Length: 171
Image 1 (tube, rainbow, N blue to C red):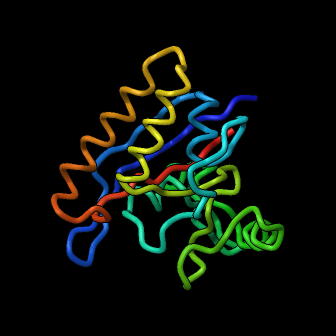
Image 2: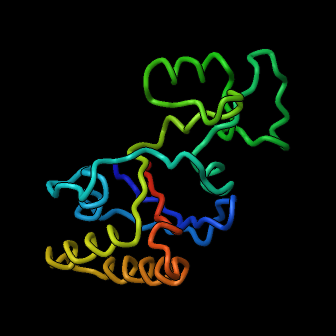
């Protein structure tokens, strides 16, 4: 079974976190290792941090499942199957440690099929890119990393932590 990297550039705009772009970096086990120590022999720059405390709506939507009461009647044309869970299952996932509640309202849980959530700032991404290039991995994944860094630099202006690359893995 393979795994994929899902990533987003989020940035802070006043009191709000907004999403700039989504990236699917595919199956690159060297990159997996550098980003989060997942499926590779390469050590991560930093251990996975989990999701940031505050995220864009897009990141929340892509990493969470809506939780309904067990007695709810769901119309699949409004809420497609797989986009929600029932409360008893949510409680089981949280108790097993494969999911967490998102916020205090207990309306969403993190998707239990996703793992190794983390985020990196532009300076950390630049180090990842240097290490990735040093591995001399065939292909052009380094160009995607370079593009992500370019966008983050532009969004940051003079604040190196204004944007972040938020990512996770799916199996």
